[in-house]
Every structure is written in C-alpha cells, then in structure tokens.
Image 1 (cartoon, one colour):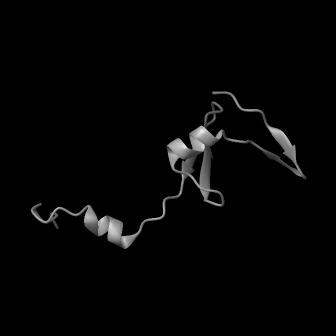
Image 2: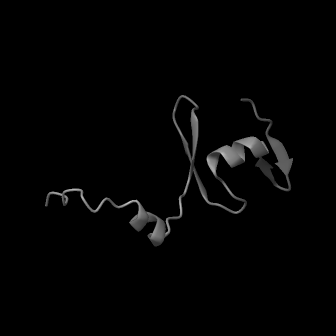
Length: 68
C-alpha cells in the first residue's frame, strides 16, 4: 500500500484510507506510536484503551492461577 506525504500547515501528514482505519479499529484522535529502524522501516502502533468490563469478560475462571 502506498501513501503520499502531504503538506498540512507547517507539518506533513499521511491520510489513511477509511477501509484501513476500520480494519485496524482506529478512531479520530486516537494516539499512535511511530517507530523507525536504521533501514527506514516505519511501524505505527495504536495505543489501545482497555475497558475493565471487557478484560474481565475475557477471564477464564477455570484457568490455573499464574505462577509467582
């Protein structure tokens, strides 16, 4: 997938297609972390917001307790 870097005020911006935004579950205003390597690879990682009720719903009551 290719993107065009565009001038946005005194900054530069990349517009992500709506289909990609939906696929990744991103929302406007969400915080993203950008990392780069010496080879020029760019990785964008969304900062996830966890809701306690959703985390509890994933808990398996029959699972063994974690080792200490």
